Image 1 (cartoon, helix red, strand yellow):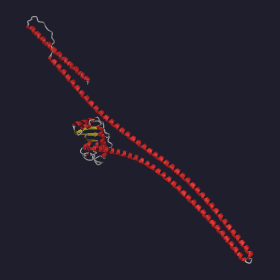
Image 2 (cartoon, rainbow, N blue to C red; image 1 turned 135 degrees about the vertical axis):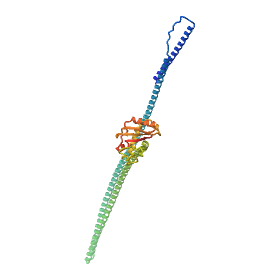
Image 3 (spheres, rainbow, N blue to C red; image 1 turned 180 degrees about the horizontal axis):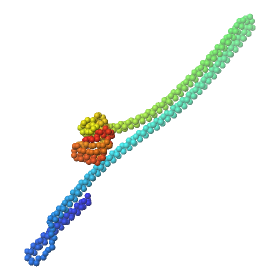
Image 4 (cartoon, helix red, strand yellow; image 1 turned 45 degrees about the horizontal axis):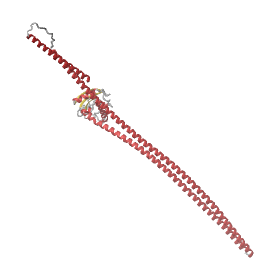
Length: 445
């Protein structure tokens, strides 16, 4: 641009210098003509000839006009270059703005992904900490249960030993009591026998005639002694059996109490261990449920976002393709469901060639994104429409594009955008291709 300005300055200076020289030349010619008239008027017979250069005014004017035209042409060329440079600079600024926006969005997505990964790592760390804590609690519970079982077993062994000692002591006491009772009975029998013998001897000395009576008394005394001895032995045996039974019952009761206490301790330890394990499992399950809930919430948010995108894409069916869904501008062809051609509507109905609303909406979104990628000033045509009939091949190649109505400026931009494209996205199915292979498309920014 500075080079063109410098050339213009040089051209202006050349024109100015040329004009000044022409003015000086005209002045010299006029002055010389005045001198010749003055000499002729003086009557000088021997006049002298003057060499003069004749300037053609027409040539001067033509040269001047040619210079003016060159200057105007240079000025127009300069303006055209300036305008082209400004347009290129504007397009570059728009591309740079779009690129910056894209980079900004990518950075935002990266930061969000990084934050999500960090949060997930933190949650996983918390879950691992909770699981580790639960394992430690379970280990402590197992150690406490083992210790309690060992203490209960030791206590039960001590109580059993005490019961055995008590039973042994009771048996010894019963045995001693039986021996004492037998000794008492034998002593009583011996005393009775001695008394009877003494009485018999005394009576024999006094009453020799009453031998039969004495004999009967002796027999009675003997029988009484035997019965007393038998009774004492039975009583001693009965007392010993009762004492032994009491000792056995006491030992059994103490053993049962010790067993019951040991079983209760083992049951308490098992319950405590089970409770600790259950708590650990509950904590682990809660952590897993929390992670699953957060994952489900993330999946739900992604599904909602996807559903919103699909809903927005579905709403673009009427916005991007206009009357295509009502059948007014449906594509005509041999595969049409009626004489007016296929007309996609809600769901998969006859006349669509089998294409569902979701497939149509998805393909519309792809086509819209492809076109907007080649039309940078899409938003500047808000409120304007353009109808183009696009003829596609099965792989999405654009065979022809014709304008059928709409705003001329917007349609011109749309034609320029499609001319820069070799193909649309490939239709996802034959049904979608049949719907759009020769369809009039209404574009509405």
